Image (cartoon, rainbow, N blue to C red; front, side, top):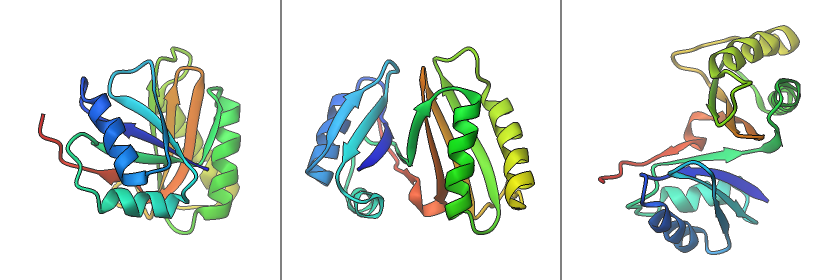
Length: 162
């Protein structure tokens, strides 16, 4: 099961859901409490889902970020998940990118700094903030957090004209 965090322009979420259904065929898409933010679940592998979306001509999908693990939005849970995934996938330099929505207890900047230091300490990985081989992505949505370790081509960005 692949989980994707998908962003769309505010008010175009319905179009983005249709596009996800056309591109991926088998997919369940849920809205979130945040305008323009959707969660999609598909039985396709991450690679297959990204390949289909990459080759799809979108009008409403802005970004697609695969989420490898969903955990409770607590610092220790996020760090444990990120370290586990990084231990398996991280080969080369990295940067941590966090986005926090709807959670006053967490700060994106603190997560980036603390998690980055932890990965350096635990895995002896090298940080490269300008051109990393991998991004450690933390997407907090209220009480849940999505965590991934992704190569640059595994985050899709599209030009959407509103």
